[in-house]
Amino acid sequence: KLINCLIHFYKSLGMQNIYNSVKSGGLKVAEFLTPVLKESKFQETGVITPEEFVAAGDHLVHHCPSWQWAAGSSDCVRDYLPADKQFLITRNVPCYKRCKQMEYRGELEKVLDSEDPEGGWVDTHHFQESDPTALANTVKDMVLEEAVGESQSDSDAEEAIDMEDFVESGMLEEDTAAVETVQEEQGSSGGEILSTRTYDLNITYDKFYQTPRLWLFGYSESRSALSVDQMYEDFSADHANKTITMEAHPHLPGPPQASVHPCKHASTMKKLLDQIAEGGGELGVHQYLIIFLKFVQAIIPTIEYDFTQNFSL
Image (cartoon, rainbow, N blue to C red; front, side):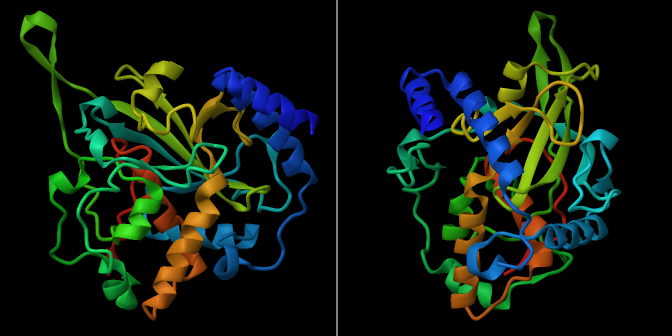
């Protein structure tokens, strides 16, 4: 109760960073006390066991070779995961433009779950015209396979879309993950440079929330570490410092890294599972991370990571 009182006090003062720190500390204690999930509850609640996380990771590594397993620091090994499969990593992921360069239309926004004390997710396309039955009509034949002669237009990838919006609008579809090179002018000299920020991305298993968790650390064109403020330029403004916070990595020493908080992951996955079941289909737990990487793109829309095992809906 004392922790909750402190959290509400700090948050009421608008001290988001202090609130995040207090909450992070409390969750670390809770994670330590939470027993390891042994029985699968993927279909029932959208959470996964450590064994299912490893199976999903193996599936991701096989189909997206830029992702690899890593062991991390020997001082941070979690005994419920194999020593050589503590987390997944992909390095030098390009980020060619800042989120503020993307088109923004505030009139399309709506806060989802407004009763949520965390503020809910921001649906950036809520009032955009769409076919509400699109997913139900197409998801029945959903399979994971390599794309054949299909592509996604650049305009489809331009705007950030909220995680739950992917589920509701049927946008878990094929994506060629093609990298768009964007040139930026350099001052008054008239010269042009290619902005090539890069990120290292990690996926860990969160024992408390029993879901994957995404971590990011950015580098400038010269491979120097980006500051916190610079990294926030590459995250959706609706989620920076709220859904995305700076925290210590569970497997790597060094400075804090940006992390997509996993509190909504299970409920989003469960919602998708239910809609697939209504369409007569079924989603295997080994496919979890492929879909996970698809829906978190709403939060980091300009970071061109690999999830090129495409969906045919």
